[in-house]
Image 1: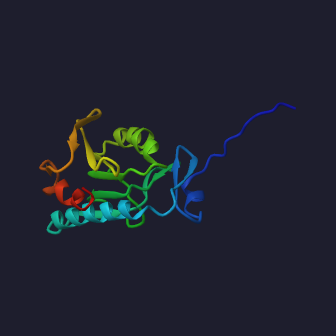
Image 2: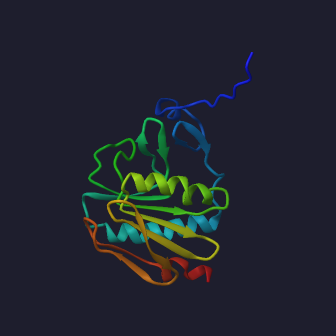
Length: 180
């Protein structure tokens, strides 16, 4: 008998019955980190609040926190924050968000910076923002139609998203203020 290693492959049908928090990437199950630390949750709330304010008069766009983004039957991700416009699906995000924000944790940073970066890039997510909770900076990437281009590192600047369906901005001085 041959000694073969098998890796189980899962689909959305399997995923939607699991308990706990998971992501599914190309059929492989990834357990989400335990409940994020207070700093992670606080930064998430501060960024979300600014987006909610920016999009309050934008009826076609919504700000979502930790919502499933179903990319395919074998890939479901759960970004920290997503800005989604004109998505009629009521169960999960079914089209590329305008903006995705991932707040880096030690246990998920590598996945956010590599695997998820590549997936979001191939899905044509317009903006991908990685928030570093150690250096208190945000790295903003903008999709140019082919790939992500780094816009820059933001510590206390305000970034305006002027090329979206509705205007939005993030004031990173306000986001990081309590941690400096």
